[in-house]
Length: 323
Figure 1 (cartoon, rainbow, N blue to C red):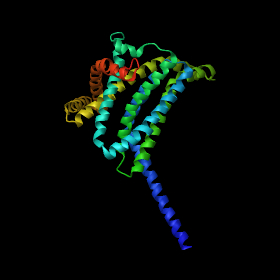
Figure 2 (figure 1 turned 30 degrees about the vertical axis):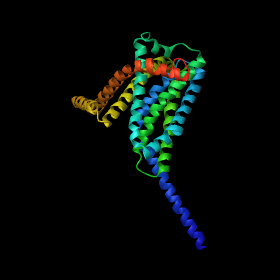
Figure 3 (figure 1 turned 45 degrees about the vertical axis):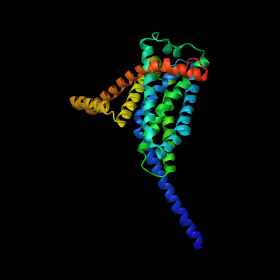
Figure 4 (figure 1 turned 45 degrees about the horizontal axis):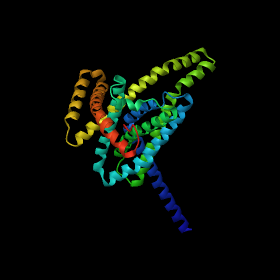
């Protein structure tokens, strides 16, 4: 009997430890997710642009494919890589994130370049050449997953930095929870956004109340404007996040002048508007990061389209490897 009681005591102790570990994981995941909220917003703004321009019945399958790619990015690639780098090669994290930021700058600047001068550079224009719908869908999904990889790397790195030093498995479980929850949040929001016109159409046709039908018609009429706005926000988000990653990387490597200047300008602008000091300071800092990201991205376009793209095409035997 005493042996049974001792065993029950051991089981109870293990259960308490497990419960404490679950609490630790939940708390760390909440803290890490909150710190990564800014990048999550950017990801949500960027992604709808990849699902627009297709038949309505293809929108949700496209989002589903991108979300699966995002989960693969976070759980299969980035989670083990982040843990291994943190444990054995922490000095490599910042350089890799800086390169990722430069890629985001290039992606955002390329979209701006195409919008302002759509026929100015055949190397850039080739990325937007017409293709059959299935091929275009594959390209869009692949492009979305590539962009998601950079944003997911930022999210997972921020999350890893926010986790208190703890056991390896707790860090791994926390990162997995953060990755899954953020993916569900982002792509659930994206699915709702891109299907909002269909929801509005259903309301306009089937709702019993006149006000609800009017709301449905408003949703349908307003969706093109909303999607255009989100496309602009998504491009700006690429430049902002990419520029911020490059500025941070430069500061880590000793080139701190841009970071200090942007912070000083943001602080001065905030003091000039005391009623919205934090908001103004944030907007100025984001604008500085975005402008730097645009300049860097424009500078990278010739390198990517005339040097790296042709080199990759020769190595892989593919045409149009501009990315």
